[in-house]
Length: 365
Image (cartoon, rainbow, N blue to C red; front, side, top):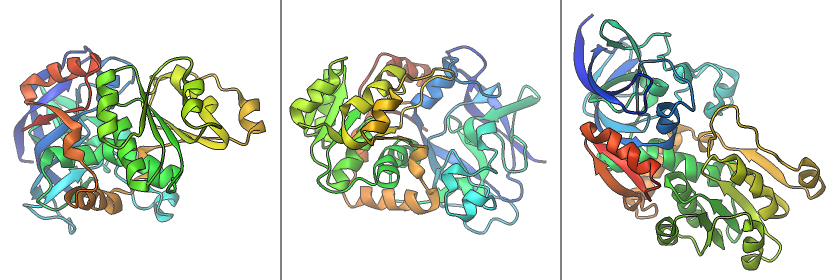
């Protein structure tokens, strides 16, 4: 089979990625090759690079990607060369019970979490041995080969850096609000963490008409940015968070969203809620870290604890919708991007994330 060489950011067990030449095969049946225009720098990538999550190695990093279809394999009908696409990091199999019910975000037949294509193979080799695209995308690479159902066509007018973020942080944050929590106008909400996903949640809450929207973070710059995306109040994070929330909403909030993935802040969420309120876990903690929850208080006060996976996103439905909302000026995704890097600067981008920089960084190809 014909192959090509692509430059990519490769994880080989240290927290400094290597830029290597990787061999990429041609797209097979049901697959497409995409020339990447931009890749987001996401906290999920950092979990892998810092050894907190285990993935097959060597790993081509990146899962928030957007670009242009460059070639299509046999049997591909929904895409053609020249289409602008956003990649989804959890492609659906289309045939399991969840997929048949329209709940593709809990598909049981996808190989994406094993970093493999639907046929169980990887399209990549490094030094003659298999390499693995992170979540079957590996968007920190000049070219990728992905499943047809992992590439969703969007209008050409959407810039690649904006489109890349739609593929994960925007879909996750907005989806947690509108798909999982189903927030109604006038309901109150607390958002713990004003990073990329937290700001996406705030955008979703503003879109849904929630009020008040309380942003919580330890970084004053992040809180200032949160206000620009629709937060009506800001609070410095600390153990007294439930009391601070009740200074704004007397009985507690209707909803609390955690967007960091820290056990201690997840544990705080139920205490910020009014009776009957809902706590939504959006941030993903390191593997094997339990969270202490007072289950008796949760039950006695009729509160709910909801896990949000990818914002219950159906990519084929939601990516084009989110793109239209951006083009119509209702989702200011471009203002979320505070830093742009080249592929060669990828380690600088992750160092900036570790330092707590506000907003989101994107690699531009």
